[in-house]
Length: 134
Image (cartoon, rainbow, N blue to C red):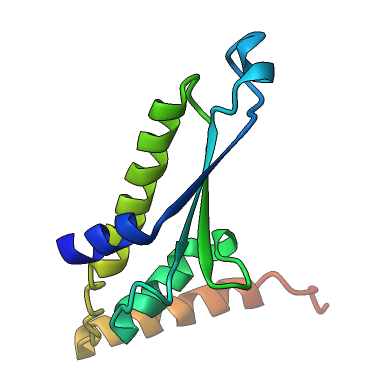
């Protein structure tokens, strides 16, 4: 995981744009919002991690194969840069974590009988709700 994150930080490109939101008049003068772009093909990830990352990225993944993270929550460039890097690290960490396998369960004979008895009782109750035939 550490190697992947180092590689991602090395190839990540940052661009700064003017942000809306908090900052007063400063927001109109200074480009504080950060757009962090990382090319997922340049990361050379194993196939399993690559597919999990593409699923996690969702709409942040563009046609060029770049994950674009937009950070504009803070008033300063440095804080937004840190926020974008942390979000990228969290996404990569989640992609590296292998999901637990689902263990199939099987209903035993007694459980199956109880379920069928319940269904039978429910069907009988419903059948009594029909029109009355005199």
